[in-house]
Image (cartoon, rainbow, N blue to C red; front, side):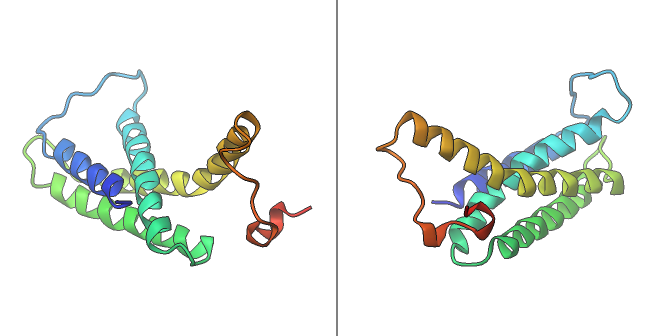
Length: 143
């Protein structure tokens, strides 16, 4: 079940990459296509994180992050290769770098976002989300 977001994101990015000369809104700056790659692969990184955190729940967070980054790097490379065969599209090393940076952004931000949302929900609905058990709280959050 935790693979569904990753499968959906992979299918969506593959479908979008298959569209010849994909029209995107003009944002008014020269490297806007790299921005689109960064945003798309940030979403992909979140989907990959959900799958990996479910698949490797007992592994260290650092290991999980490296696995997510490896998945994003690999799929980004495959996606750029795929685009090089689509008429009107081209695969680019710069696009791949934006893909990797987008995945990395998700890897860095997601745990913090999760902690902030959990704390907010704990305040709003205290009975719904219990406080973490002290043994499960990372050392950096212990006081």
